Amino acid sequence: METQIKKLGEKNISAAKEILIRGGVVAIPTETVYGLGAVGTIPLAVKEIFKVKGRPSDNPLIAHVHKDYDLNKLVYIEHDYVYRLLERFTPGPLTLVFNSKRVVCDEATCGGQTLAVRIPSHEGCQQLLKAVDMPIVAPSANLSKHTSPVTAQHVYNDLNGKIPLILDGGKCVGGIESTVLDVTERTPRILRAGLITKEMIESVCGSCDVALHKEGDKVKSPGVKYKHYRPKCETMLFESGDIDGVINAYNEELNKGGVPFIMCDSVYEKEFSGKNLLLLGNTPEQIASNLYDKLLDGEKKASLIIAIAMPDEKGVNMGIMNRLRKSCG
Ligand code: AMP
Ligand code: MG
Image 1 (cartoon, rainbow, N blue to C red):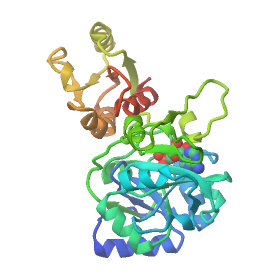
Image 2: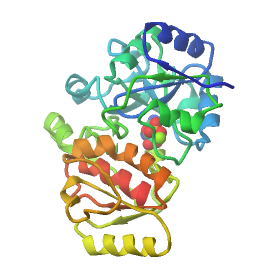
Image 3: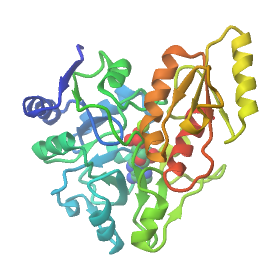
């Protein structure tokens, strides 16, 4: 199959819609990462997503809808705080997990009682969702376990020959996947950290739990148990501030004849001057936005990426650390 990359515009939205309503899959941009979409009510189309990605069959998909879509068609909204969350953070990088009305097929929810729903803010994505006017289920548009794509070219590099169309809507600004929040209980609970932080949710709901996964726990958000986001080269992750550790690892890799790259924020730039660097930027938002782009750039030229942990897990750093541990830990 020939995979085409086409600019996201009116004409190509029609082409994508055609493919989708006939049960095909299309890669689409969102404000977080690129997604591999299919209509959530067509079981064969949803199965194709799992096949293309090599995704484990017990890891459910997020349903994406446009901002005027009536969520009551898909799920039960059981708590008042949900309306405040919707008002404050959507459209945007927040996924809410509800009890499902099972309109979206069991293939997408992996037979579970719940459905995860998101309203993306990416304008082109909104236009596509509006045109289709059905829930589009979409995981990240990468091969399973690999780093998530934030450009159309990243998607092409993983899925060339496996899907007909990639809509190019530019580089994703968010850079890490949405916050996944369970809203089936009286207190909302973060299942996956992201750009909508615990602190932001608390400011709207009063309180917010974070699901902790201990060895042997039944996992409520299956995706968090898998190996994830890994670049194709070797990786290491050092504690924040462990400059000696980083330099030792760097020199050791050089002595072995390898090509080490240090991935760090601008605070460390001076410490490592003259060395191969993958610079992530200044603020947590910039770091999140650049993380996958730098990992995917790094895997092309490095034999080893040496990453450094964030100084804490407050705010957006919680989401960054979650991705860093899995990609580089
Ligand atoms: P991905 O689209 O690959 O970024 O992964 C979607 C994430 O949402 C994974 O961590 C899934 O486990 C999670 N997810 C999707 N549907 C549900 C659900 N019904 N309940 C809990 N977590 C979900
Ligand atoms: Mg993914």
